[in-house]
Image (cartoon, rainbow, N blue to C red; front, side, top):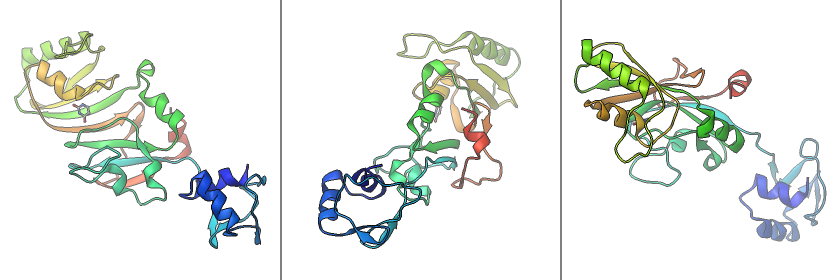
Length: 234
Ligand code: URA
């Protein structure tokens, strides 16, 4: 790998600032100052420093966060803390949420800096499933529940959309507790589906993405790295 590329990937320096740092003698390769950005290095074996700080390439990162209430999945700072503000990792701004949750939705949020992996989960044609637990404003029981389950299985027309939702699975866990499994990621989809059924979601929690469940040991706001096996699920 070229030294100037290595510098731009491991420091906040742009290519042109990296060039200047090299010229100024701020960069050392295996203890010796080096000025040529075109110099080939082996990031595994060579020791590179900038202003005497050792540099290392970050591998790709894959994290699971138990998103709490009042946290936003945006990159820009807004009214609420961002999901990335909860992660204590280097170069946190490189991490992106794998699909968003509303500010008032809790549960499983995956974060990564591997764009291809993110795409495999979010690409519409992959139809990756997501399972949500919803608490409803109105009880949904008996014949009304059976009717709602059948309508969700057929597909619902949501206000302003040009196609019905894909067939989904609704399970009632109690009169106001529902589990909804969908394989799309439309804007506010779960809330809009219950609105189309004449109800309202008062609490929403994502339990799973594809075969990956939220780790029950993670309290809201806590996160952990995914295991190799979990990464390989997608
Ligand atoms: N559907 C919603 O309505 N909100 C979410 O946060 C996720 C899915």
